[in-house]
Amino acid sequence: MRALSTFGSMYIYRPPIDMRKSINGLSVVVQMDMKLDVKLPALFIFCNRRRTHIKTLYFDRSGFALWFKKLEESKFPWPKHLEEDVIAITLKDMELLLDGVNVWSRFESVHFETVV
Image 1: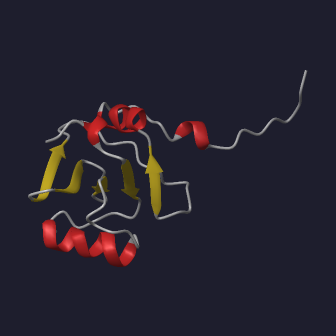
Image 2 (image 1 turned 90 degrees about the vertical axis):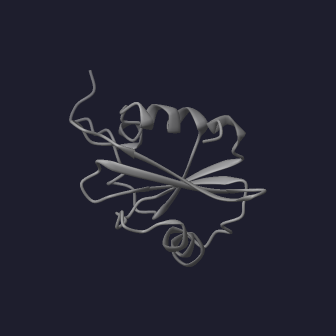
């Protein structure tokens, strides 16, 4: 896989994906559901319902590449509380996500009953 820093953009598709999908199936999701050009210099990230598997898809000058990561004992933090199906993330967030750090908690609303 290319270094994450070489991608112009990174997009998470929030709804769970059937991990039996391969390059062709995920390309259709990028074009039809995400409404993005699959040949952008971008990384497209997908996760299964149990959040134990991630697939990433990208296109480079010579063709498509698909990368797969499976966790054995934990789950990937995934943006459940956001309403958008397509979420742009930064390089640092992607690195943290792959390390299992919940980058989505900073987007949660904080409510105070009293202020001292």
